[in-house]
Length: 426
Image 1: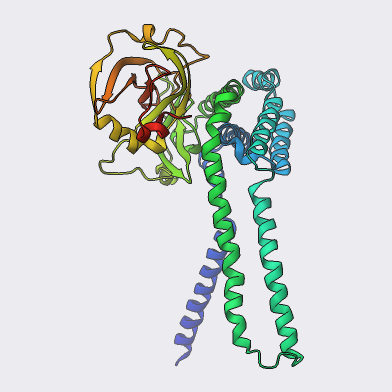
Image 2: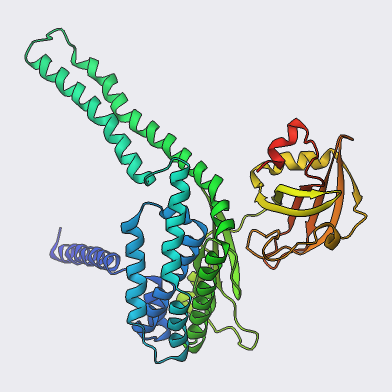
């Protein structure tokens, strides 16, 4: 190999080394989407951080409102959230009128007091149902209870074998024990987790129903925060379609729903901000085009729309007049309810909705899953297999694009067929 070839090889290897170093350096200094947006639009880092912190508070309040039970017996975790929120609001620059009003609203609405009250009430409910500690602590405790005895047995058998006290003990005998050592904690964790998710599903509606007023205060403040963020983004001329975030409810205005997903019974909705009618969408710089894609891909194809059936449990009333009820979401029984309706004959109720339900108001209403009061547009009497009559209330399409159907007894003394008892029971 001549000198020219050697030089070319050295240059080539040096180039590869530099390229590798460059890739590693790029990986170490990979920037967040917020930093890329900041640089591409020439924004102040303080403004981006301020928006990110406000979005953090919105996401927390929204999740806390929907999943209050997730925070029971977790003082340290909740205290950290509260500390982060109060630290930010205490240092909030109130030069902007919008921020000054935001801070006043936080204090006047007593957000921290409501957060603590909801946690306390959720813990009281959990204790009354036999849950006295967080699921994480229970899992750790059960794992210790299982693993320590098994580990002790293995240790004792190993020592006895080494001391020739049980010389005939084959070391391969320990392999099945080791398998059990690994498998049993996983089985226990799976069982406890399933029970925990079942407990949340069974009781989250009770929390929402009993403390709806407090929850709506949290959501209203989250709405104020979202509007504050949108206003600031428009002032900075940030393309709103780039700012995506995940919430767990559909209770907010001026947002575009990009996609949604259900993870272990918890809804996740991906949004970006909607432009006000008087504002033209801001152009997106070429280097930021990649961030237009939604986080969760939209489902394609024709899928059956799940019906949101509300059952008016603990119904009080006679002769077709409903004087009291407790709305209960029975989405898990949707297939059974559909089957019941398919085996029923329908006729329009002779009386209008106002006559059938004279006490319908904010204090006693049928709510959409987004929290809005359902507006009932029709009432039908259903006759199931010529044995049993009940009401079917159909609501108008809500602002969240959901449609609510509610069913109810017509008389509290009506005997419910055995196969339908679980539908109408509380």
